[in-house]
Image (tube, rainbow, N blue to C red):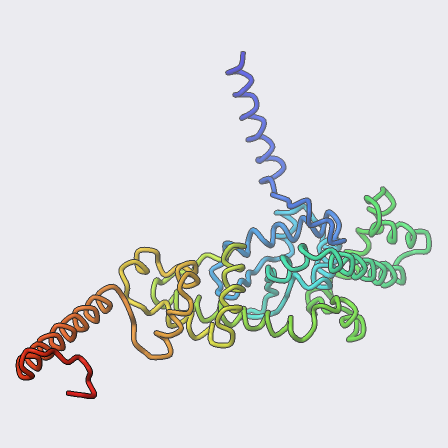
Length: 333
């Protein structure tokens, strides 16, 4: 009976995947940022692809149709979710390539900083409320009077039947503009209000420095190994720690580190953890232009041992010349 039950469960999963598509992982805690279930679903899927992209900067491409297939979000739901994610600073968009396509990137450093600071979480929630209000007001001009209220409710509550109808109309009215312009939020004033006060010039400088570190390291890694290094939450923290320890020199040291021909580092494929373990030592090697591996260290050790033996022999010769009295003072020789 248990075997039959196991078979039926497996058959159920296969049938569901055939009819409803692959299941999507969701980080429920992301909803606390004020982005709602749609925003959390989109951000969770974006995190999934950020960890798998080969782009050194973490960028990946995904069409509107692909988003819908993977998350089940309609065009209008995607647009609102993207606006919220951009508003709180954890989601970036840019057009590139030929033909020109909209690419996406999750700012994991900003996301971790946001989730770890309750005050910034509150600020993110307020920013999302503002986006939701702007979205409803913008769409209200295109909707019939009876549908305006249902459009506003779509930002606050699960969509009712009336809201579903207004959503379909919104998809038609926003389809053209979504393909033409990236999702930038309305004005410079609104953009300045999105970020909490703590995220000022110093925070911006830190983020740029960490991106430079990762960019230098990743490019050197690709050049040496022919594949992009793994980027995940642990690696992101290591990049931040490296910046704290080496400052502005960290990017150059990270690039130099990948070029070191040391058997231990090669076995570990020059992982960032190894760099962080002896960051100051590798910084000295970078500054002097002299790699220090196991063989080099042994050579220096042998050289020093030979020098010590020569000095000892010279001291014994001088002692015999002085009548058996050894004089180790170099100033009296």
